[in-house]
Image (cartoon, rainbow, N blue to C red; front, side, top):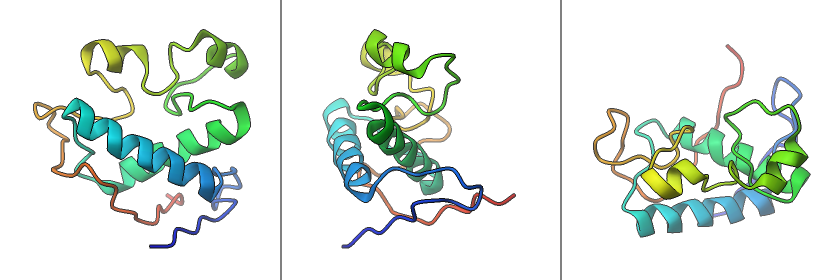
Length: 123
Protein backbone atom coordinates (compact mmCIF):
# COMPACT_ATOMS: atom_id res chain seq x y z
CA UNK A 1 0.00 0.00 0.00
CA UNK A 2 1.35 3.40 -0.93
CA UNK A 3 0.86 6.20 1.56
CA UNK A 4 0.79 9.73 0.26
CA UNK A 5 0.43 12.62 2.64
CA UNK A 6 -0.27 16.20 1.78
CA UNK A 7 2.43 18.58 2.95
CA UNK A 8 -0.18 20.98 4.34
CA UNK A 9 -3.58 20.38 5.80
CA UNK A 10 -6.51 22.74 5.29
CA UNK A 11 -5.38 24.94 8.20
CA UNK A 12 -1.91 25.35 6.68
CA UNK A 13 -0.04 23.42 9.38
CA UNK A 14 2.73 21.22 8.06
CA UNK A 15 2.40 17.49 8.45
CA UNK A 16 5.25 15.06 8.77
CA UNK A 17 6.84 13.60 5.68
CA UNK A 18 5.55 10.29 4.35
CA UNK A 19 8.88 8.70 5.38
CA UNK A 20 8.45 9.84 8.98
CA UNK A 21 4.77 8.89 8.97
CA UNK A 22 5.70 5.38 7.84
CA UNK A 23 8.41 5.14 10.52
CA UNK A 24 5.97 6.27 13.22
CA UNK A 25 3.28 3.88 11.92
CA UNK A 26 5.68 0.93 12.13
CA UNK A 27 6.83 2.01 15.59
CA UNK A 28 3.24 2.38 16.85
CA UNK A 29 2.14 -1.00 15.52
CA UNK A 30 5.19 -2.77 16.99
CA UNK A 31 4.85 -1.00 20.33
CA UNK A 32 1.12 -1.75 20.59
CA UNK A 33 1.76 -5.44 20.01
CA UNK A 34 4.69 -5.51 22.44
CA UNK A 35 2.73 -3.78 25.22
CA UNK A 36 -0.62 -5.49 24.57
CA UNK A 37 -2.30 -2.15 23.90
CA UNK A 38 -4.68 -1.21 21.09
CA UNK A 39 -5.48 1.79 18.93
CA UNK A 40 -8.54 3.96 19.44
CA UNK A 41 -11.86 2.73 18.08
CA UNK A 42 -11.89 5.93 15.96
CA UNK A 43 -9.03 5.51 13.44
CA UNK A 44 -8.88 9.27 12.79
CA UNK A 45 -7.56 9.73 16.34
CA UNK A 46 -4.72 7.27 15.73
CA UNK A 47 -3.91 8.79 12.33
CA UNK A 48 -3.83 12.33 13.76
CA UNK A 49 -1.49 11.33 16.60
CA UNK A 50 0.86 9.50 14.23
CA UNK A 51 0.86 12.53 11.89
CA UNK A 52 1.79 14.72 14.87
CA UNK A 53 4.59 12.37 15.91
CA UNK A 54 5.90 12.35 12.32
CA UNK A 55 5.81 16.15 12.17
CA UNK A 56 7.80 16.43 15.39
CA UNK A 57 10.26 13.78 14.19
CA UNK A 58 10.86 15.86 11.05
CA UNK A 59 11.05 19.21 12.86
CA UNK A 60 12.75 18.22 16.12
CA UNK A 61 14.45 14.92 15.35
CA UNK A 62 12.34 13.14 17.96
CA UNK A 63 8.71 12.01 18.24
CA UNK A 64 7.63 14.48 20.92
CA UNK A 65 4.06 13.95 22.12
CA UNK A 66 1.86 16.05 19.80
CA UNK A 67 -1.02 16.38 22.25
CA UNK A 68 0.60 18.71 24.74
CA UNK A 69 1.59 22.38 24.77
CA UNK A 70 5.28 23.17 25.24
CA UNK A 71 6.94 26.52 25.95
CA UNK A 72 10.18 25.15 24.46
CA UNK A 73 9.86 22.04 22.29
CA UNK A 74 13.62 21.61 21.88
CA UNK A 75 14.11 21.58 25.66
CA UNK A 76 11.32 19.02 26.02
CA UNK A 77 12.96 16.77 23.43
CA UNK A 78 16.22 16.91 25.40
CA UNK A 79 14.37 16.19 28.64
CA UNK A 80 12.89 13.04 26.91
CA UNK A 81 9.93 12.80 29.33
CA UNK A 82 7.32 13.42 26.60
CA UNK A 83 9.14 11.67 23.73
CA UNK A 84 6.93 8.82 22.52
CA UNK A 85 6.51 6.49 24.25
CA UNK A 86 6.39 8.97 27.11
CA UNK A 87 7.26 8.15 30.70
CA UNK A 88 3.60 7.77 31.81
CA UNK A 89 3.08 5.25 29.00
CA UNK A 90 6.23 3.30 29.73
CA UNK A 91 5.65 3.24 33.49
CA UNK A 92 1.84 2.96 33.82
CA UNK A 93 0.42 2.41 30.30
CA UNK A 94 -1.20 5.86 30.44
CA UNK A 95 -1.26 7.45 26.99
CA UNK A 96 -2.58 11.01 27.02
CA UNK A 97 -2.88 10.97 23.21
CA UNK A 98 -5.05 7.85 23.14
CA UNK A 99 -2.57 6.21 20.77
CA UNK A 100 -1.94 3.20 23.02
CA UNK A 101 -5.01 2.10 24.95
CA UNK A 102 -5.52 -0.74 27.40
CA UNK A 103 -8.56 -2.98 27.21
CA UNK A 104 -10.12 -1.08 30.13
CA UNK A 105 -10.37 2.17 28.17
CA UNK A 106 -13.86 3.10 26.94
CA UNK A 107 -12.25 4.25 23.66
CA UNK A 108 -10.22 1.11 22.94
CA UNK A 109 -10.58 -0.55 19.57
CA UNK A 110 -9.48 -4.03 18.59
CA UNK A 111 -6.67 -3.13 16.18
CA UNK A 112 -2.93 -3.06 16.59
CA UNK A 113 -2.40 -2.15 12.96
CA UNK A 114 -3.17 1.26 11.58
CA UNK A 115 -6.24 1.76 9.47
CA UNK A 116 -5.23 4.75 7.36
CA UNK A 117 -8.00 7.31 6.98
CA UNK A 118 -8.10 10.85 5.69
CA UNK A 119 -8.54 13.38 8.43
CA UNK A 120 -10.87 16.32 7.91
CA UNK A 121 -9.35 19.29 9.74
CA UNK A 122 -12.22 21.61 8.88
CA UNK A 123 -14.81 21.94 11.57
